Image (cartoon, rainbow, N blue to C red; front, side):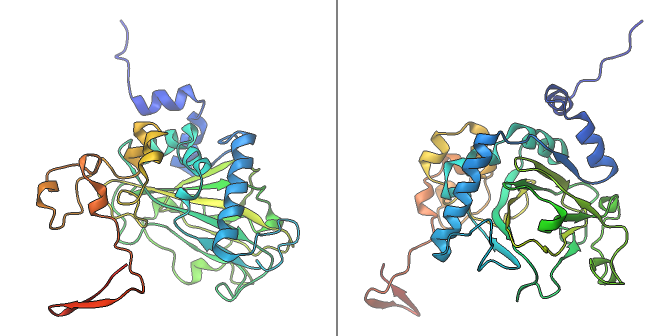
Length: 308
């Protein structure tokens, strides 16, 4: 007599990629580190893309060795579409296998942000550390709503202000109290542990897990990508389904379109013929934000319009 075999496509994919231990760590501790999530070439291209995106937005290309002008903590949102390397990163198979295990293959991309950690505190972070927090708002449901992934484009060490996690906090189903958020001084949360990782690694956690980061005493910079995947019924932070270019969809697999939200059908307006359609079947040019310029003004009814 043989026992009934247990089949599960998520578990089969984890086994194929050798990620079983990582799945156990997610369940037990609420976080895991996959050291070889990206190959060296993609890691290098991702770092260059991140530095170029920052230079484009600020006019100051970061110096990784000195960190001059980028002290403290910096965040640039909506950077996915800046370079095709970012599209490859968001589709990394080991990352997606763990994301799928936590929140399902129909998940969408909520945000893709570029982070820099420089030395010391900053105006936005006067304490020098990023307080402990969870990425899911309260009240927490009885399941994981989102998964957070930090992609390390440089080595993340304790000297560069590494991430802090509270093991098991994903099971508490609440945000930390103000006292529990502290990461420095005599009142620091003693349950927080440091998590270091090499360039090319992915740090993955269900978004309920309490995490933050310590102040960096190092003059150099660490560069990471913070990627949030969410279940498809949640409102995402960044507008991808309305704005992702057709060429980006064409050069990627159908799974990329799913991440962009093209398999959802919410987001209705006066385009009544679209109400029953998924976004992949709509004319998305009808939904893109209107560009407002400094052209001549005209008034229609009660609303003043500005021509692009």
